[in-house]
Image (cartoon, rainbow, N blue to C red; front, side, top):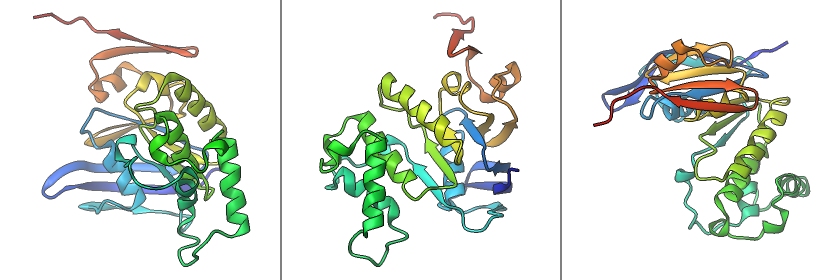
Length: 248
């Protein structure tokens, strides 16, 4: 039986005096796979910050019914400084920082866990490589290992398919499908056609939040999303069809 991991009630927030989210309600349960969509500037990343405790609220509340929630986070690729002098192995191990905040070195169990994650991601041969030498897909894999190393109950990914090739994207989505058997997932994406066959429910964020308890993309959802395309998703291949528009 699923249980609530995160509960947002009437959450409002923003930056300085500018409102970004208003009256947002959302409950994330164990086993959920929520796709978060919406236009640029609509508040998707701000919603992630609220869940991670990085964004103060103007009003409303956020609670974690099960107590302290173990959360793994994969940020947008643009937030990562590839010039930072750290190896792949050190990057992955940094996901253990809370447990080892006072320890100068990893213990045997922690080193084994880092090695297991690198092997699972196919990055073991790059363990000593500086992150600046990685491709976009390799860096995303390393960051995902970092997010997973502490065995989170909720995995949050903010547009993980940006600046990566299609091969990595397909591999990532297969990996997420397997991970969802063990943890809840919140996936932020601008590509609603691609994620619709993958997720279980859809949350459309455009200042407010509209929750859809299925992955079907209806005409109503597209209007809320404020997207100028019609999307048809059937089988493994989604299609985009531009609506009629006049050319100047």
